[in-house]
Amino acid sequence: MKVAPRKKIGMDESICIRCRGTKLLCGKPRCPILEKYYAMERNKPLVSKKVIYGASPPSIFVGRHGYPKVSIGPMLPPMEGDTSYLDTPELWHGKSIDDIVDFRMKLVRGKHTVHVENMDDRIAQYTQEIAMAYKPVEMEIEFEKEPRGKIALYDEVQPHGPSARIKKLWLENPRVEPKIEKLYYDEVKARDAILMLYRENVFVSSIQKAFSAGLFGIRKKFVPTRWSITAVDDTIGKELLKEVKTYPWLNQYHIYYTKSMDNLWVVIMYPSSWQYELIEAWYPNTTWNPMGKKIVIFGDHEFYNGRKEYAKIGGCYYAARLAAAEKLKKMRRQAGVVVLREIHPGYIMPVGVWNVRENVRAALAVEAKKFDTFREAMLFVSSLLYIPVKRWIESSELLKYVMRQKKLDDFNVV
Image (cartoon, rainbow, N blue to C red; front, side, top):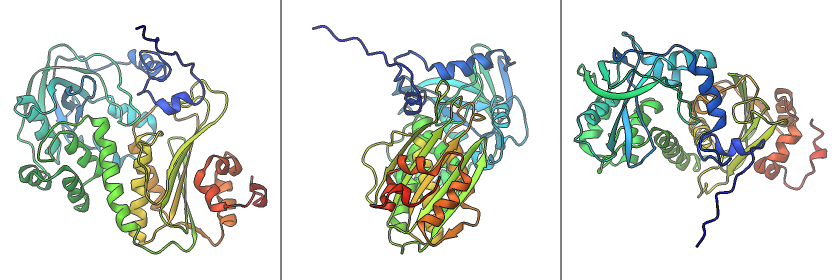
């Protein structure tokens, strides 16, 4: 029987937004957008020492290619002292893309192949110790070859510098986070461990790191970094929403907004039972709309009972939902939430979904603009957005739902 060849899909203004460099929907063996950035970075000076000594933030990375045999290991800058800012996204709001790429490029990724369930491997154990630390860990890595390559770019994960296979690894005794260490030895279920640490005000990024390192669960195993980020955002968000759904409805329309890295974020909260939507508008010449000639708007939503399928828009959906759920829990209110994100041409490369979570958090940390009617709220929203609000409404399932049977022209907003 003859197998039909894989269909080649031409690149258009929306395929890259659906793919984001992970699904290769265009039929190409490598993402041409990410390759463009790799080419830009190849001529920049990289760390070229075979032996590196420094202080890991602490930071680790678990790859996904070849699963269940994956590359694991620490990420290390050739510098000492307090390097924690290199891998703490909660501290990055307000930083420029140049700032983030500059300090992330300093992180050299050590790679060691291991089965995700092999916890007896020595480098696997070192990687777990590093992930358990709450302060930078001094270490020395001898690589098989000098670290070479390119800055690594992902849609979910913050970028990092070149990589090389580990030959030898030495580290000082890490100062471990007692809360994480206790859960490791108590063999608590992964979901319970995530929620317990979150309630103890441990940074979400630290929980994601520990989860990726296989520190939680009865049957421990490494989890690819990409997967761990979304899994933790999703787990915490769902748990918060259980409580949010017991609260009374918001009684006004609340509007929040912020700007960062040439992104504009607008969050609309309105009187309703829980429902949520994230919509992104990618301008031409932005990361996932590099060759488009028009703005592409793309989003996902859920009603009260949530989603059964993974959001097509990716991990950013769960990151923004977590931030929204946190705010509603703090307010002790239930509401419908629509997050609008305009991505302007200055956003030239992906920096990770932390960007979504932390910017929505930042927007919601500011006092809301409050309105009594949907019309008043949307008139204010239209003054913030560059894209006509009518187009946002046309692209939104929830905003149309709020309007019910009314016509767009009845609102006379542009």
